[in-house]
Image 1 (tube, rainbow, N blue to C red):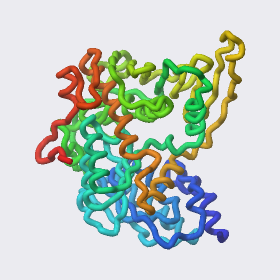
Image 2: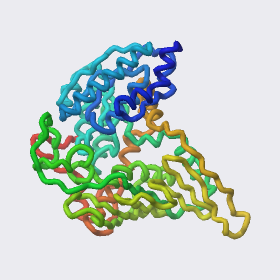
Image 3: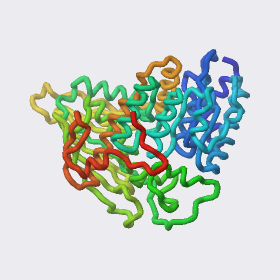
Length: 450
């Protein structure tokens, strides 16, 4: 590798920081010999995690970025400038760049008409994932879709069916699946050293923001708000229902349960080789925020009952320290010890007073993670898209399973009753709960049939 190419690889973090972005330290794949064939990508939804994802794609040598799409023209133009700067730096470093400036769209369907685009990154609010994902696969594109994969139980089933129908590669943005220390922790859980695990805890305590009540107001200039709403109910514009804060409203998302919960619950299920729960009960409320500030709870506890264990989910907005002095994490509580894992690393805490003594296990000191899960996740998707291997680290089936569980927890909270799930019929024993399985799309948008 020549000096300039090496410098690009070493300086990617600085480039991103200079643009006010998340780090784009390139994965190892981006610093190898140039591939003869490349994957051309387009991004739909450029404001938040979608653009963080795109930076990791840009860092890979065999990726070309051709198009961006967003209904907020302010975001679109800003990100177009950011991409152009990154492409300029990439070219100066000696990488071949076919598209120096991205093509811009306000309607994702126009982006999908471009036959040169092989894959689409979906970084929109959750309520848009299903339509864009299915339309993209129908148009012959592979998809990298942010988590949760879809905003309702039924929509998750639709995306999985569409992936099978169109035979497309899907990677859901559950990037911890590609992070080695999470994989190592799961290997330990699966080894049986902990003994019988009867309780798994998963949690997220977030104190880095508070939502303040704001009045309805005019739609910002440059925003196609009706398109932003899409299949969701028609409402007056409110800043709290837009961009980042959309996640606290049922029309568009599912609060911390389907935001951070999808990451943590994914590994609770993974560690226990579990599918869907038999029963769910959930309680909580708006205990810290003023009424009507949000729709999703700012404090929530949920118990998922499985055949041989219970899974306890906890979350709160405005509290920082959770179980085991960790902001977020998953704990597998076994007869002989407890494994605790979060994004920083993992450890095992033995049950030191267990008798007989021969069952005492060795402690595993804290093992720090490498912090490159997102990079590795994107690498895995690109490798699978190039080969046609649909067995990605977070496939449509994996994304469906955990998103369904998160939605079940929210449904139990919303109906205020313990509910039971029939996994063969994909229904609850409760009509109020069943009414929340499938969304009602606002005209002219229609729920896909797969």
